[in-house]
Length: 256
Image 1 (cartoon, rainbow, N blue to C red):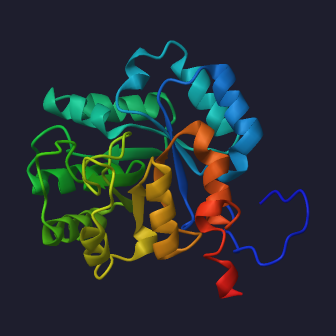
Image 2: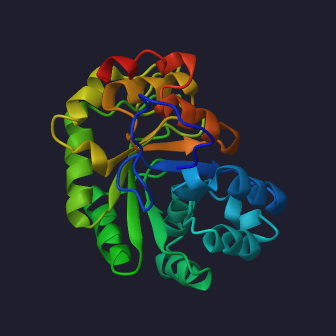
């Protein structure tokens, strides 16, 4: 971690390649110049880039962007909605060819926008895990669809058993579905119940809003895995992780 000067009583952060303290950044169509700026200013804090939903389908310089991130040691994967778009069109094998075409080492398997039999979802995970590292997303993008905690736990565990490296708790880029109420408030009971069965290091919590990031960091510490972070929020998030922003300023001092 870059440190411009010495400061005591700062939480220790994990080093790349991280298993915990993971920051997944959402690229919603950044230009090549913006991607280069992200790498220059905060590449040290970015563990993986998600090209949101199906933006990769229409972005004009896709290979150049992927190569740019990967040359900086930052893996890239395509949003789960794109996986679903291929699956619903019965083009799963075409999706696998896209992963190979662009030299992608990660893929997301999700069913947030389509209805997919869970056994079939796990079979997709098994097949893809022989090709790439799989992140599987649990939860619906439909705010009206409330999944009970036991179902979250059951699906997370079976997807990990099927070969997923980590499971992602759904929140969308707005942070107002899945793990959260439409107001953005964390479904606290849901999260705490999930954590009784699923190890925290195997979960990436989508938390695009600052209040959500603060909540998870206070609950699970500086090295909680967080996702759907906007590029301009990477450095602010790092200061929250380190207790160097008002939201967590006192939280970590008492631990030293």
